[in-house]
Length: 340
Ligand code: DOR
Ligand code: ZN
Image 1 (cartoon, rainbow, N blue to C red):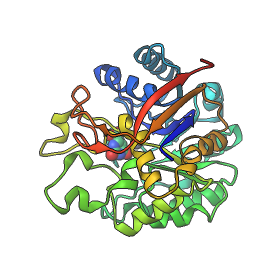
Image 2: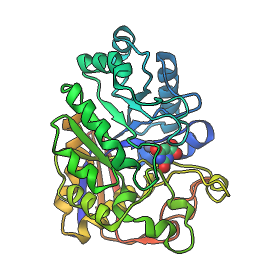
Image 3: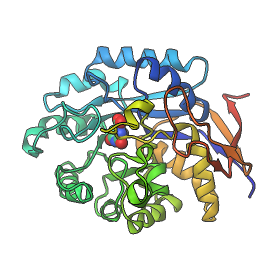
Image 4: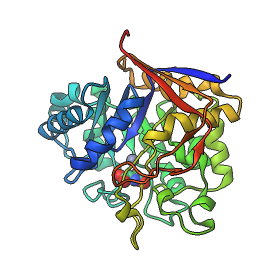
């Protein structure tokens, strides 16, 4: 197959930031995707109705005429009660939980992980049918953080059997194995964790634009991620975790975590799926699974890709994308919105 049309592609984990950065990156996602789950880790984090509404309006303004659904998330806090969450039910698609300090702007996240302390909020979410998205890393050794967090996922999945729990940006074979142990566990997988290992980040000269949390792991982890993504396992969805930082924050002594992939995601996924003879699974991985798991109906948009080279720009505004200056074997050639 030399071409492919994807119906309503979705990015179920996206950082759009705010201000000037939002103006640069939101149109790039909206150009290729029908909608995205928008992360709430602004400063301060998106944690009430007013912030949700105003951030949503700023995203809409940055996107302009493109049809692009903003699936908003609220930054988890353990003092959210049933009435508060119920009042926001129509404005949010999920709540995102960060362990305190684990990544960019997560300082106000959960400390210590005492499930009893979180249970009133989680019970309310379960009753209201609000999915819980989690950045699942412990504060242990960097390569072990995700695997060490799995017992927390398991306890949550057991204690709240009706709560949909999404293990965000999984990066290990242990997380892949956990997926099938509980009916209510799901996962997103990024492009970069499908493409790279720690060797690409730090095996030669250090490549700051590939530095992210969770850090890219071993070859066997990447294999496990590929096996569920390329087969479009019904519990996994594409979530880019595209996380732009200005070049000077990446090429710095204290490099910020995040890989910027939004503008290359569909082309690079097509190339990867094609090279594994799995192009027929891409529709499920980048759209159908998410529509079913989140029960959402994104706006009509179809994206045609062709096996033609695409040279990734060196920069988008101040941001250096993944694979800057490199060639990808597939390109987006046409995007059709609505019933055109
Ligand atoms: O690499 C990352 N960057 N991982 C995250 O979890 C957050 C993100 C960001 O917001 O920059
Ligand atoms: Zn993220």
